[in-house]
Amino acid sequence: MVPRHGAAATPPSPALARPIYAEELVELLNQIAPSAVTGHAAQSGARASLSRWPSQATLQCHPAHVRLAAALARSAQSAESLGVLGQVDAEVCRAFLRLLDEEGALVWAREEPIPAPRAAAAADARQHKQGLLSRIRRRLGLF
Image (cartoon, rainbow, N blue to C red; front, side, top):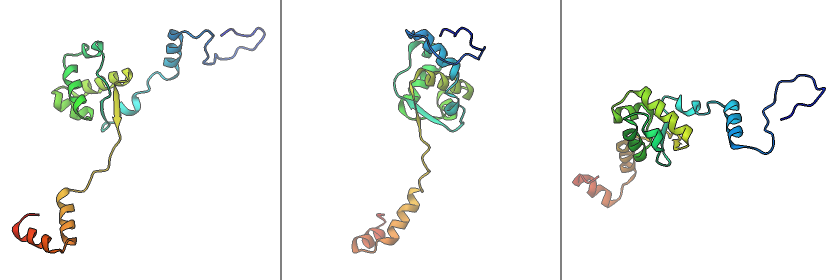
């Protein structure tokens, strides 16, 4: 960006000069939004899973990162549940999740409502069934 001559001193706006270079673009994006991962990673119950395997540099940062990545590859985990599975401190897991999110290797799971217990749903369904086969199953103990 080239400042205009004779213009009053104004604070610089976030803009890039042409041609656009990758290093300048990354630097500008980091200035605008230095930490975009705080939304998901800061939530205590947020669950994430791997969308792809992390880079070797990320895995070598801590000895437990390979175990944690393997656990995330199987199913969506929160930082707390990941700490239990990987037998490491929850803060190490939060830092690992932040690294993976910055790398773009995570998919954050939406919070699903907790379903009703299966036994209660089966009991309700049994009360509604009044057919011959339902009564035979109930008497035989085959619910």
